[in-house]
Amino acid sequence: MHEQAFRDEDVAESDLVTRRGTFRAVAFRADGHEHMALVHGKTRMREHVLVRVHSECMTGDIFGAMRCECGDQLDAALDNIVREGNGVLVYLRGHEGRGIGLVEKVRTHVLQDERGLDTLDSATALGLPVDVRDYTAAARVLRHLRVRSVRLMSNNPDKIKALEHHGIRVTARVPLLAPPNPHNIGYLAAKRDRLGHDLPQLDGAAEAGAPGRLSS
Ligand SMILES: [Zn+2]
Image (cartoon, rainbow, N blue to C red; front, side, top):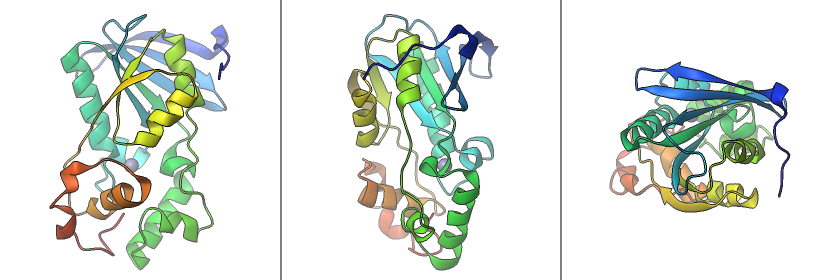
């Protein structure tokens, strides 16, 4: 897998001062989407760089929705990067609802709320795939940034396989364990039980959440 380098016209970067600290904000055009990498500290030509490859979730990331843990993971990843002093967050667009898009994602929410379906069954009930996210752009971005190998902040072993498939060396997985709440416990349990995510923070907590209406 040797995806092409970005053309100059498809990349722009500047400093970005945030509440957490200063990042280099690098914007990319790829596959009809615009993605962004936030780079903190020294990561170029480094090994074992702390990296989060984050799939966009407007409801969770921007609005703080509690039916998923995306916003918590985004916050924790940026906090970890700043605490460590070095790292990269790749924010991937076009990944809403594991790739089905925002409108269809909201349709799955209706089925989850009204019929108690989980995050997988609500997609398949609409004739939609469970996960069609593509990580080609993330691999191209990490290569553009000259990151030599990554410690990936993720609970999803499949994401590591996907990045490795695209030629990224992953030397460790760093868990990002958001504490469950009554609105996302069903969603997290489905990710653990049906998508193979490693979520040990649910042990003991999962049974406390009623299935059905609380599932997301
Ligand atoms: Zn989300």
